[in-house]
Picture: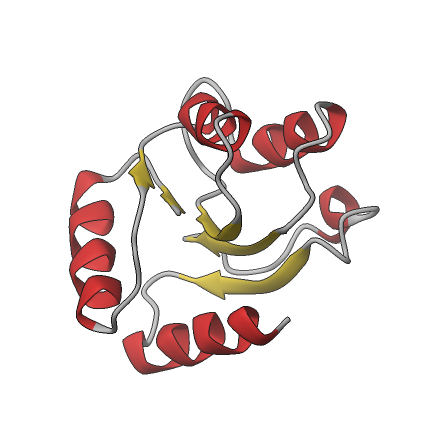
Length: 118
């Protein structure tokens, strides 16, 4: 699942990962991410941090609060240059990677392949 408020990112990443053979869900908000998980989504989540209304950190905290972290792995996908280690505290086992935009597509694909093995 790709969670990002930028429709260009959603469209681009959907195409990239579908071409790699992945089933891709895209949502444009943290709330929609939560809804997908409540409906049974399991797998990899590429989570933008800077989103309106509910940012990526708030979304991750809400997932944990609702017990929706089983069978998911998250990679942060953000324009922020450096990780916010304070906000990551307690979620280290859930967060696989911190990827900054603009990202190298080959590296992103490789990271997702590795996350599938986790």
